[in-house]
Image (cartoon, rainbow, N blue to C red; front, side, top):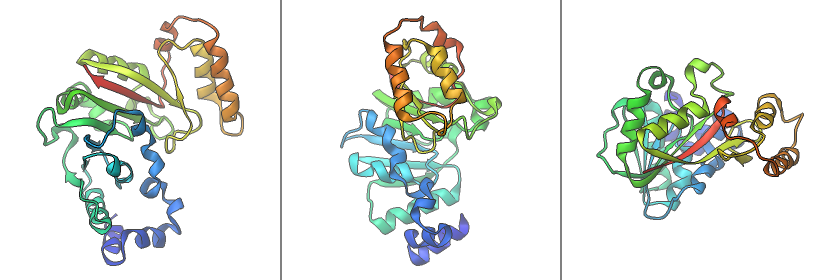
Length: 258
C-alpha cells in the first residue's frame, strides 16, 4: 500500500494500479464501480450525506460521489485513507473527504448521515467485543429515517467466529431500533455484488434456497435456473420461521432508522 500510494502520487493512481496489476480489471476492489450497486437500492439522492465505513481503496465512495451531496470515506488503515485522498485530488472530486479513525469511536455528531455503508462487513474485532455498542453508534449517527446497509461475504469470512449470520445481525439491528427493509443474497459468489436476489423474510421454501446457496457453484447453477427456483417458491407458502432457523453468512441487509 505504501508503495502504491507513492507511485500514485508520482504517476497518477490509474497508471500506478495498471503498473502493479496489469490493468484495472485485475483490481476490481480498486476500480470496479459496480461494487456500489447496492447503494442504488437505498434512498440515495443528490442531498444525501454518506459515510463509507471501511472504505478501503474508495471504490464505493467514488462510484456514488456523483449521486450525492458528500461522502466521508473512513478507514482505520492510514494507507487506504491516503490512497483515497490522492485519487480525490487527482480526479478533482470535491465532495469526498477521507478520514482516518477507529471504528469504535467514529468522530462525527449524531444525525450526521443519510446512509451508512459497510461494504465488506463488520470488522472481526468489533464482532467479538463491541457489536452492540457499534451498531448503536451507527444508529445515532444516522438522521431520522436514515439507512444502513451491511454486506457480508461468507466466502471471505469462512470462520463463523468472525462473521455474523444474517438472522443474528437482523435481530441485533431490530433490537437497537432499526427496521430491516430488505435482505439480499448473492446469486453467485458475493464478489462485487453482481447478481442479487431479493430474499424477503416471508419467502417460502427457505430450506430449498439455503440448500442452493450453500451447495451451488457457477458451474452447477445458472442465474436463470436460480431465478426460476425463486418463482416456484413464490407460488408456495411456508412459515417464515424457517428463515430464522437458517444461518446465511453471505448477504446484504438494508435497515432504516425508525
